[in-house]
Image (cartoon, rainbow, N blue to C red; front, side):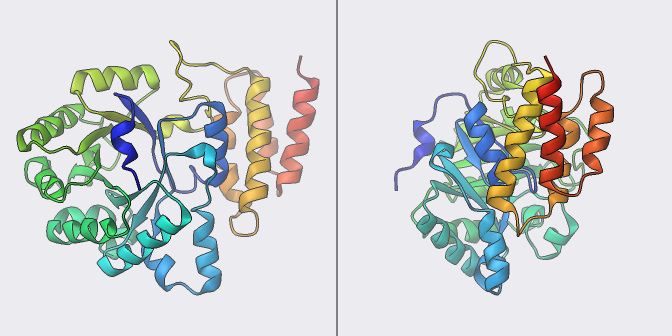
Length: 322
């Protein structure tokens, strides 16, 4: 399958994989309102895809639902077992994904306990083995990671990854220890580009961390010379984020309510039965804010127990708004 990475514009803008946020429903909405240059799924357990019983596997596969409108789309996987990475990557290739991304930056303790996520920064030889295993599926393989574990280790960590010639490496510009508690160090993204260029690697460098909007992403790309920028938290309640306009699009309260109704409908269609309605509630504050009466409406929505109840309230609001 063609390596789509090197056909993207420069700089390109990517949607970050956010667990329980950028699910199949929200991605489909984003693709409609303001499609990024490349999209990623939520991170998905390769171990589960290989070992889980049928019911568990069915739930995991819901994370890997995508529409043609989302292409190019990359499946993000995590595991510390190369054999599982290979098998899960082959599955993703059969499902029609454009690429595989390996999570080597998640700081969640449960994930790290299994030797996955940011724990791989401490095991570069295993990290390299995982990249080689994923590549066997024939899709381009990328990596999302951090600048180090307890300290900045970019000088030693990044060359280990580049040695395996991944298609792209996303640098979340913080260490694992820093979590998201300090400002992202975009100087490290610039340094990653320099390291890549010194090695004469063709791997694309993507910067990530504290990006406010597309204008901010363009500015950071220009300053660091990175190939692309990944936006994450800015997408909350804002499927318009990637609209390529001179200034960020500011939707009206009515537009926000309509988008949330559509989001709820897609959630019901694609994820009901395997994903708790409570997952949808974390979006309410992001959509419903910034206008008189938003707080009260949000409180009403948080008390609902179903998509139907929330949808009814929102339709009434939309119908009564001029």
